[in-house]
Length: 233
Image (tube, rainbow, N blue to C red; front, side, top):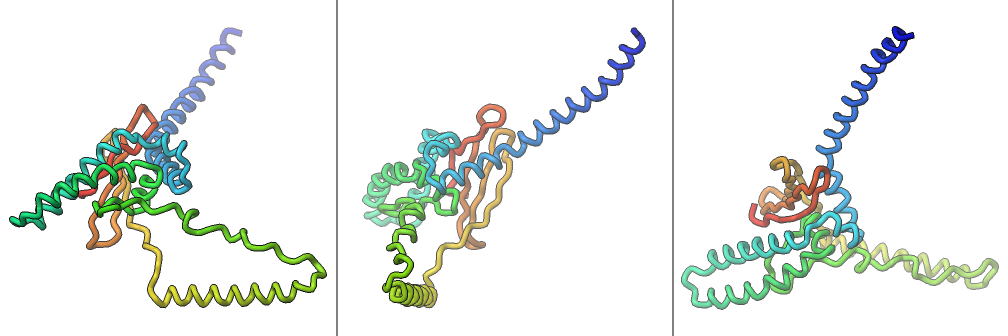
């Protein structure tokens, strides 16, 4: 009996060791993928304007401070390049400083996070705000009148009106296309670690366009939060 129990224990050891190795590999894999998962979850929540979920993935005090520093640097370099002894440069600097607060307040929001993660960073333009969510600019198509009841004498007229409206909408869309009104193209995006506790997502619309980055910092073992931006890549 003692020999049988010893053989059972020896047979169980490889299984336990294999399970431990599998658990370690799974933990390492999840740890490596955790910032990518956080980025995906944050972008989905920001695009949906899910403020509660966005708050879980953004360190807003740190992001606000980073935005303030980055926009200040952006405006400073712009004024330095345009000053060249111009006496109006000081006035421009004061105006630029006055614009920093409202701009930071506008971008340290779910709307601003969505803009940052979709290739639309602040440019330091007076009155600049992140774009409105798509739902606010595209009303639902289901708000039109209900179709007539079966057997109604107005069904044929209603279908004819729908066809005319549809053709008018199509011609309007063709007109917009002819005038070159097209939505902005998505940016080229690269993401990767810049240290054990730092994960950086870089955005660029084209070869000649300036780059900027969103910076995630680790909190704990598997938690990552958007904590900074770099507008001066």
